[in-house]
Every structure is written in C-alpha cells, then in structure tokens.
Image 1: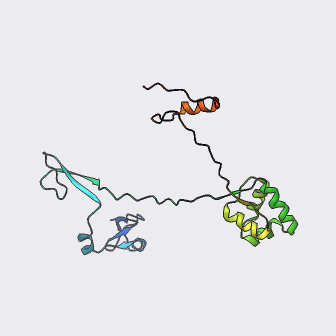
Image 2: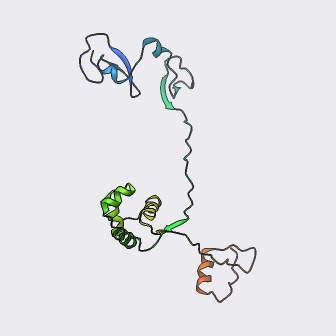
Length: 196
C-alpha cells in the first residue's frame, strides 16, 4: 500500500488521518500533517453536510437508502451569511492643491521624505507619490500629516441644496422627460401630460 500524500510504500500499518478536511490513508511521517482518525472515531463521525437521495423505482428518501437504488449526494442548504457592511458617512474631503501644500510644509519644517516617513510611520515612496499628486492620502494619513506639518488638509463637505420642483397637478408623477423639460424651459410652467 502507498501513502496518499507522499507516495512512499507503507511498510507498517497504514494510518487514517484527516489532512485539510480530506480523510487519507498515510504513512507515519505524513500523519503529522493532520489529525489521526482512530477506528472508533470514524464510525461515530458526525453526519456529512450532504443529503443522500435515492433515485430509482420511484422511491425518494432523505435519510437512508435501502435496496439496490442508486444514491446521489447533494449539498444541504447552508445558512446564508449576512454581509456586514459598515455605513460610513463621509463628512470631510481633501482640499484642492493638497500636493503643493504638503510639499511646502515639509520643506518649511526641514524634513526629507524619509524623515517625515519615519515620524508618521509611512513609507517615503508613498509621501513622494502624494506630493506629486499621483496618490490621494486617506483620512488617517491626512490626519497624521496635518498634526505633524501643522497644516489643514481636510475640510467639511458642503452640501448643495436643491430646490424642490413642484408639478401643477397633484396626481401626476415626475418623469425623466419632465425634468428635461423643466431644465430647458425653467421660466415656463409644465404642460399637462396625457394619461396613457
């Protein structure tokens, strides 16, 4: 008999082991890579996550199969994992011209890219990319730069207020065509729509 992992001939008794979820017959050397399955454990192992379905002479059983009917193994419905999505409200944005502001402040403080990188625990190449405008710093890095260089990089987001558009009739719904007409004819009142 040969080991199912290394392929060597097994001279002593073969060992059953669970290696990365697979039950294999292995040599003593390869048994170290998994958990050894003892004969009494294999018999009382928990049921597999598959349903056994008998297909044959019109009989279907979800538990055990009797007779000479062929069996199929189908996966049971697993519980769906809920995707946990963090709802993050963005309240600050990066100012325009951040690259030149960071470069000027760094040079004013007398830091090289390497010195500033060591001070804020960031790589010098990242700081060079930010100063060239090839990369935008995230909020955490922007906060570090603000504290170290004593500059202001993040400003609160200003929300634009939109004027509500009112329709002449209360029972009519706004459509995309109405919005296009409103934008092109702002001074005129909307026309009565034909009901379809």
